[in-house]
Length: 314
Image (cartoon, rainbow, N blue to C red; front, side, top):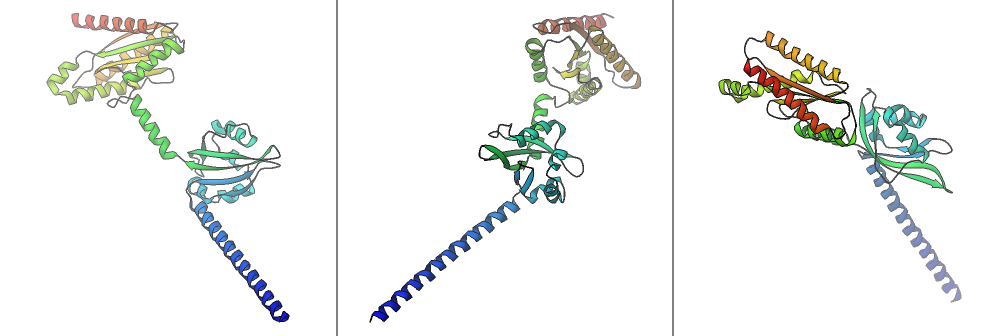
């Protein structure tokens, strides 16, 4: 009887062990399945996911292959062989940010905008969210997710362009003109001048040829004036046939550009046998823009109308 009880006990124990083993095997299988599923999600993600050591030396532990769809082939292997290749690919203006990121001198709670160069030398925009890895109070690594935002940046630039530019001529619009007036008047003290250009006979063209022809002429005026655009010269359209040009520089610089504009329209009219573009062009200049921009505009406007009235009296 005792032998039977012992045998049953042993059988029960073995069955329990087999059950535990089976349950453990099921859990391991589930974990492996989940890990495989996560790995597949990571590998197939369009986002770039990475894990990288920065101490005691830079070393990638993982870099998702999605990076190769944007920057070029075999870059994953190249990065494992030479982790410092990231410094060769970063845009020069973003280099300081990258250095701060890998040395722990960055606010990791904010998204990081950066540009990376592909195999053809073209830069692409990326947005990154990353987290530093610490061991005993020392940052030893970094991990993050990087997303390509070329389309987002392109859309943003298109919206900014439309917000700042005149749709007919392509030069800056009235809103931009007003912002520049405020900027020079309150924030940036500059030696600056304004040239105002106003067409003399747009109404005659509209009446004789139609408004579509008038719009074509205004577009030509914008193109002719836009030739003078530079980092120090800003062309804006502030009304139907009225353009304002900001010039940062001395008074003689403003007058020189005014003369060049007059010469440009004179040569244009000499080459055209149909519609002539007659412009009244006035200018004014102040050595200090602070609190003087409204006066500057009034003086340029008065000069422009003085010239326009003189034309009419001839």
